[in-house]
Length: 425
Length: 144
Image (cartoon, rainbow over all chains, first blue to last red; front, top):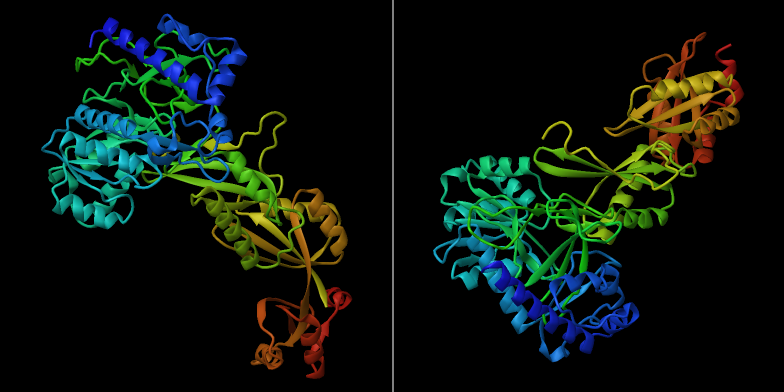
């Protein structure tokens, strides 16, 4: 699609969206009225004057307050991969589900997939958007979907081999685990028909891509999405593997300076902001993702005209994505405060163990702890790990450290130490 | 009954040196020191002449310290000496959580330190069996 045609389509859809949210979502009406702007723009540049939507708006509207259609039109809900106290609900109309299927079909196609492919979907199925998103996309494309979901890695390898999987969809770290498990089982995935991987739901690096491609013998494609905006399929790489084409007929992307919230020039880094111009169930105006990226300038050799965003390189807040689960370090603090025997001082240390990310929470033993035996301390450590697991929905290794050994800061505490790029990678 | 200090230590170079230096600087003299270690951390158990001073010095130096009571028994230096003691402890249904021993410098016996749940009952049983259960002053007297 030529750029002027695309922009005309975006503008038309944007104005329809603005009218819809203003009429149907009290949060938006209040935001627009407060900002003194009308829910209509004469050109795409008018977007810059509209109020933002943030995650907290969704939390406050929990569960259904941001929905823009009657409940009878909502055919499915998903939730963010957030955890206790952080969950947000997103609703889809039949049209949303259909658009999403189109977008994921497009994603699989841009990875080189066709109706002849056999797609093994090892993303989790359920409230998480990954599994069902990829599933509907594979079926829309006419490919064969294997809805295996995540986990049971030996079986994943067996199915990969026996069913003749040609495309694997999962998180990049899980792809590596599948590769390593296959090696342990004496199976060389590189000799199997698999040729592409559609990997997303967590940040990953170029060196990890190289590793995955070597171990699995496939082309690893980065995809991007977030449940608030749609799920997987918001943007995806093509086989050029140079930036993720944003599906601009459904989402308007802005890259803003996180401090001034003004647009940065193409090619410069900033916070990614999306406006969902076709969504019916829970449309979002200028949703601040907190993800950091930039627009990849120039034309793509594949011929697609949708602009590309760089892989996500960071966050404007301190959120971590650990095995697909969003973790805010402050949630760890909340857990620690409730456990006698440990101080609420902690540090999250990220490192590489083999190819997998290893996350270790360092927790200070309190001065008041009455311990005399190794087992007392081990019990304490296990309790911390169990309480973190139950309230954050992710298992993290816990290491007890001495009182005051975690560096104190006078300003914002450094809660996350990332050693992943040092050493083994 | 003997007061024992327990100190939590990370497994990192120089930590044990720091601990002993803190005690030395405060004028505390140790009679026994035992390190129990796991892959991730260690527990150091100390019997010393002035436990309260030691505790304050260690806490001031940033260590996490816990204080508890243990039983110290003089065990004659002959075959079966320790077995006799353990049989008495077992005889009252007590479980030994951990034990360590050190040799009395001037005598023909060792001093065994036991950590049990019910210190009073075990002490009583040992005394009734004719064993020599030491108090803090006695532990120090054995060295002089």
